[in-house]
Amino acid sequence: MARRVRTLARAKKASASRVIAELVESGLEAQDAERGRFLELADRLTNSKDPAEQERIKEELARLTFGD
Image (cartoon, rainbow, N blue to C red; front, side, top):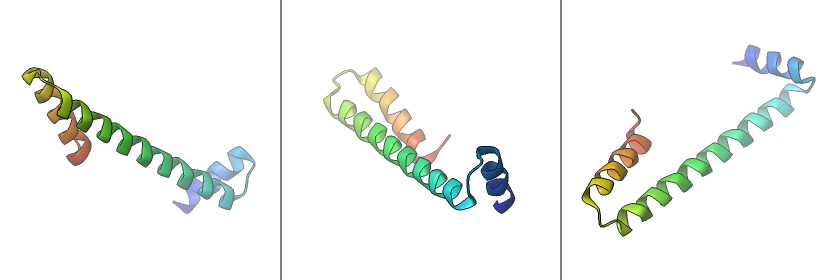
């Protein structure tokens, strides 16, 4: 892991600390986006009247929660 961070830092001409901070920030943003997607799907499931759509949404929620 440290070697990968140093390689990224050299490629970006930045410090390893800066690269780590960017990676953490990207991870947090991705986590927030995933949470937003989950909440959007949960809202759609709650409001949907179509059984086929409800099933598709449930499957996607399961993939988000448990992985593929």
